[in-house]
Image 1 (tube, rainbow, N blue to C red):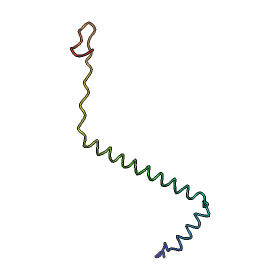
Image 2 (cartoon, helix red, strand yellow; image 1 turned 90 degrees about the vertical axis):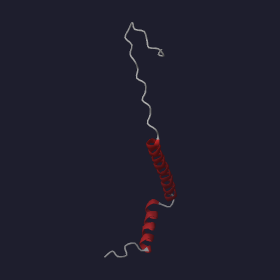
Image 3 (cartoon, rainbow, N blue to C red; image 1 turned 60 degrees about the horizontal axis):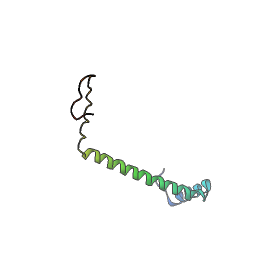
Length: 81
């Protein structure tokens, strides 16, 4: 039934319908917007991929020193203010 579903003249009819519906002035703007969106998506995906590899290859962070609580009246440990 749909052996040759997309022949060249089908694509031509679809292109003409898009131009008629959206107008020839808005199509270049839409194409520019789509291009910008694709560039942003590509750069964000690349950044996420780099962050993922950087975190997996980085050495584990050293644990932060724990705060020592000194009871009132006791001298503070050496090296703390």
